[in-house]
Structure formats: structure tokens, C-alpha cells
Amino acid sequence: MIPRYSRPEMVSIWSDDTKYRIHFEIEAHAADAMAELGVIPKEAATEIRKKGNAAKISPDRIVEIEQVTRHETLAFTQHLAELIGPSARFVHQGMTSSDVLDTTTAVQLTRATDILIADVDLLLAALKKRALEHKYTPTIGRSHGIHGEPTTFGLKLAGFYAEFLRNKERLKTARAEVATTMISGAMGTFANVDPRVEAHVAAKLGLRFEPISTQVIPRDRHAAYFAALAVVASSLERLATEVRHLQRTEVVEAQEFFAEGQKGSSAMPHKRNPILSENVVGLARMVRSYAMPAFENVALWHERDMSHSSVERFIAPDATITLDFALVRMAGVIDKLLIRADKMQKNLDLTQGIVHSQRALLALTQAGIEREAAYKLVQSNAMRAWAGEGTLLELLKADPTVSKAVPAKSLEAMFDNDYHFKHVDTIFSRLFG
Picture 1 (cartoon, helix red, strand yellow):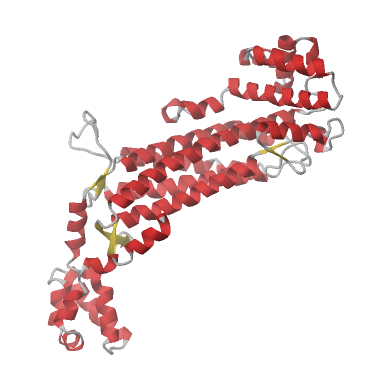
Picture 2: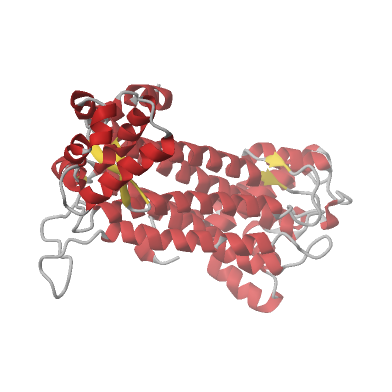
């Protein structure tokens, strides 16, 4: 994580201040439950809560203690003892470090995911607005980068809207995957901590309790979580790549907003580059890269080892912070995107009408010509159109076999772009209601 690609709200979730404050909340909620069960004195639980709430937990002091203990959680509980006093001996009763660490990670990931879902909503709003705006703006559809048949720019954007609706659901599922707490003690057997303590902590933190843990929450949950983030990042890359291609000089059907005073090149004053979309592509690569180590974290030794710990200290903040930034950036790109309907029409007309070849093919088959023969007839004339010998319509009219099978007026009707847009309303209704 670097400041250039970070937003403050997401960064704050992963700060040491936030982490240790969540640690305290877990310990305090556990103490409250233990007091209700008669495991520790109620006065002690009250004092833990009161003094802990009033105190400023010092990450620097915890680091200082850890230089001696070589154990972060023990350094934290020792620092709490300094802040709370004698009642702190009842903190962490029957618990193990992972109870605190894994539950803290769950809280942080759920908070982070709430931000990511809100980010997707921003992008969805921008996509919907621009899709409706350009519902009937004609443009060329491409396959393999080559002109295919007419579509509308609204349909292009609506397709991305549908994809990010799915991504929103993926994030909701990912949130549910990791929104579990574990307060089950060493080996997860509840030998020294009552299961009702775990249930109480889970309820207070808005989490579910893990049905069965070892000494850690199972890491298949986290693997599924980071995989979901990787899918969202890949969708962002697809959208950003579309913008980049449409901004190419030979195409120029859409362009990123270019602010007054902005410069595209230190050497070439004319340049207007799709730098924001290029940036999103790079960020997407980083988010995807965090999924693989999450998969590798699943196979921990026996009831636990610590090989996952250092990995998650990197990937949890970096993946969520990076995806947060990329989503908001892409929402801004779409919201301010300069859409060139004039260039779209020019590009539609660029290829001499060959984009209507399928309609001619179908007309010939319906006129009684065998499909393979009809295909060869249309293809041979389309190749001549590619070579600049005339428009496909002119060439088909001049072809004796074609003109004998299909009248000129019928051929002319097949070269109408609007034919391809007759179900746009239906598609939009299916998507937007």
C-alpha cells in the first residue's frame, strides 16, 4: 500500500490504532460475557471496559514491549495491564492469540468490504446514467478487434453494469465468508473458555461464530474472499481496457476527461492519453496477485501454524485499499467520459456496409439458396468491398445471382442500422426493470 493509490477511509481500517482498538473491544466483550457466567468478577469486567475506553492505546508502546516479549498479542495485553491496572489479570482468560487476531481481521475485512460495496454502487450509478444517456447511440460492435455488427454504446455500458451487479453480489458473499469470529481457545476446543463467550462476542461485533475452528479460523474463507476481490479487479480491467481501445487515435469513440492545464506528455504537447484507465489496469494486476498467496494460506499445518500471518499483514490491507482506489477511479472515468457519437457513426460507415453481411446471407438462404453457396456469394462480395471496389450493397445489387434471388429494394432494407436496435428496450427492461 502506498499513499498515491490510497483513500483515507479505507487506510484507517488497517491502521495500528484501529487494530488495537478492535483488540480491546474483543477482550472487553469477552470479559463482559465471562462476568455474566461468573468466571471473572463483574467489577473487574466493568473496570476493564471503563478504563480501556478512557485510555489511549499506544502502538508505539506495544512495539516497545514486543522487543522483549517477541509476541505481539502478549505485548498488547501487557500494555492493557499498564492502562487498566490489577483488573487486567482477568483479560484474555482462557483465550489464545488467534481468538483476538482472527476476530480482528474479520472485523477489518467486513468494514473494508462495506466500503468496497459502496464503491461498486458508485460505479453502477455512473454506468447506468451513461447507458441510459446513450441507449440508442449507434456504434460498431467488434469481435477480435474487427468490425462485427452494429450495436449501441448504451448496450456496451449496460453489459458492464450487469457485470458489476454480479460483482456486488460476489462482494456480499465474500463479506459473509469472512464475517466469523472465533473465541474458542487453544486448539479450538473451548477447554478454558465457554462457547457462550464466543456467541456473545460475535453478536456484539455483528459477526457469526465459526461453527468449528482449530486454533485459527479456516483459511478457505479468506481464499474465497481474495478470489472474489480478484474477480472484481478483472472486471475493472475489462472496462478500463475498453476505454483505452476506444480512445486510440484511429478510433476516438470515447475519451477520458482532460482537465484544463493537464498535460499528456513531457515531450509531445498534443498527447491526450487514457492514463486513468491504464492506471486501473495496473491496479487490477496487483489485486489479482494477492489471491494466490491467499490460496496457499489454506494448507496450514495441523491445527495451525503461522505461515499465513505475515502474508495476511500484506494482502489484507493492500488488496482492499488498492481495489477501493481503483473502483472509485473507474467510477470517475465513466462519469466524465467524453463520448463521441460522431466518431462512432463515422467508424460504422468506414467498412462500406460489410457489417450487414449476415442479413444478406440470411435473405439468400430464405430465397432458396443453399447456405454454403449463399455464404460464398456474400463473402466474395464482402472481400471486394474490403478491397475498396465499392459498397457491399452496390456489389450485391450488381451480382446477377444475388439480384435474381433478392430484389434491390429488399437488399437496401437490409442495410439499416436501426434493424439491430429493435430489442434494445427489451434488453434494458430486463436489466434495469
